Amino acid sequence: MLGIWTTERIRAAEDRLLAVTPDGELMRRAAFGLATQVADLLAETTGSVSGRRAVLLVGSGNNGGDALWAGAFLRRRGVAVSAVLLKPEKAHAAGLAALRRSGGRVVSLEDSPQWIDRADVVVDGIVGISAKGPLRPDAAKLVESVDAPIVAVDLPSGVDPDTGAVDGPHVTATRTVTFGALKPVHALAPQECGEVVLVDIGLRPSLGEPDLRQLELADVAAVWPIPGPADDKYSQGVVGIAAGSATYPGAAVLASGSAVHATAGMVRYAGHAAEVVRSRWPEIVATGSVTDAGRVQAWVVGPGIGTGADGRELLRHVLGQGVPVCADADATTIIARDPDVLDARDPDTPLVLTPHAGEYERLMGRKPGADRLTAAREAAKKYNAVVLLKGHCTVVAAPDGRVSVNTPRGSWLATAGSGDVLTGLIGSLLAAGLDPWLAASAGAQVHSLAGALAAEGVPTSASGIVDAIPSALRVVRAAGRSS
Ligand SMILES: NC(=O)C1=CN([C@@H]2O[C@H](COP(=O)(O)OP(=O)(O)OC[C@H]3O[C@@H](n4cnc5c(N)ncnc54)[C@H](OP(=O)(O)O)[C@@H]3O)[C@@H](O)[C@H]2O)[C@@H](O)CC1
Ligand SMILES: Nc1ncnc2c1ncn2[C@@H]1O[C@H](COP(=O)(O)OP(=O)(O)O)[C@@H](O)[C@H]1O
Ligand SMILES: [K+]
Image (cartoon, rainbow, N blue to C red; front, side, top):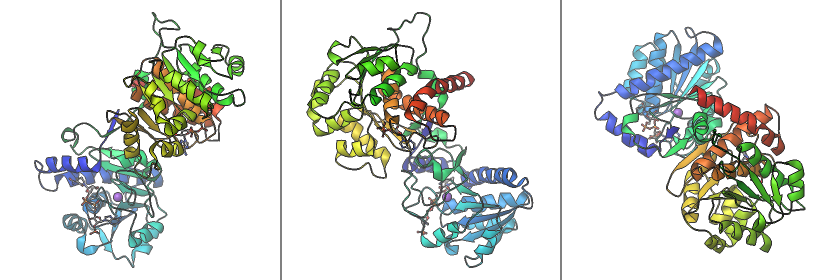
């Protein structure tokens, strides 16, 4: 599992490390790693390093210092380096001196276009973890004129370090080279960061527990239920699906099919779409009502059940069964309108809520806003539930404070019915007894992987995502074996 730390925690850890490290040492470690990455990118994109041209965009803080020191290291490899100083009087003094000693050139803002136009690579050292807001106009103008690939120092300038939010001019990097530890921006703004490379500067022992986690495929493999010799269809957990209606059976078919593929256990369906579900998925035991569905170890409830009295009664019944519940779609809306429905639930029984932004607004009375981590955390606390906040990056928060982020593999999941597939995956994992935060986090990973495999570069459908779940699980299991 990858750990991610907020900038406040990073700064505190850096202070502890700086106190026991010779002056300038951390920056030189960071800059050396940065220079290596810039050289590698030059070699990849142009075929050589020596004789190529790099332009450094240098702001007034240590981020600019990293860029200047990296420029000095790049000079040793024969790169022609020019630095554009946004605030010459505030440029990092030692870094600037090092660049000058190495034969690097300092160019004025007015002269910068001719250097930027001829650059093979541009290094964004405008602002790092102390950034506030979007790029200022002078920096924005420079960045706008860049055609060459950009290597961002620590993070793409203009993108919020702790939320990944973009609210105006910003850098879009080909590669982001970060130091010591990953920050939230790296998981939450994948489009702007490009490839993220972490350079070790010795910070890890000073950091403590991460604020945020990102599951790797090997982590998913470690928790995904695989039947053993002693298992039978019941022992792996039976998931019940309460979804869909006679008029709208699609949600039922998708959530049920997803559950069929997720684990080897048994799937029950209860609702008005029983006929359609049975004919599409003959392995499912389908009945007309949750009251005669038989025993299950977890319920999926919500997609397509409607938000009227019937839907409410159905949700109340399911919540009162003493088994984990994944409440999605219409169930979320019912809970938002009438939170008393949750009284049917024993507070110790796991509940997973899976709102998209609109459902979140209903649940919380406000939009998730730019800070999606805080948004998910607050909803998890309010509802004493694991909250999976959907979006391009999916955030999963538990009431105990754990948060994970699922960085997307493209945007293929933005297709109708895709949420129903996710719910089926999470329900199966809950039935298998997984911790609900892990179930939601692992479910989101397999969902996005299945989406990418189904798409293979062209738009797909929710049915396509269901069909790709076995391929996604093969990739997951292979990652588990090779880790
Ligand atoms: N500490 C360490 O051990 C290590 C730190 N390291 C490095 O230090 C970086 C953090 O450096 P930092 O704290 O000096 O701040 P940083 O982000 O460079 O600049 C802040 C200044 O920028 C300005 N500014 C603000 N917003 C802006 C905007 N939107 N657009 C334009 N300008 C803006 C504002 O200054 P102003 O112009 O207002 O005077 C503000 O004061 C970190 O990311 C990493 O790269 C590594 O070397 C590893 C060791
Ligand atoms: N632009 C996007 N990039 C990546 N994933 C997305 C994007 N838009 C939506 N998704 C994902 O697709 C799913 C959509 O779910 P939902 O909004 O419930 O749709 P539906 O009700 O049609 O099933 C969620 O898992 C969400 O995170
Ligand atoms: K930067």
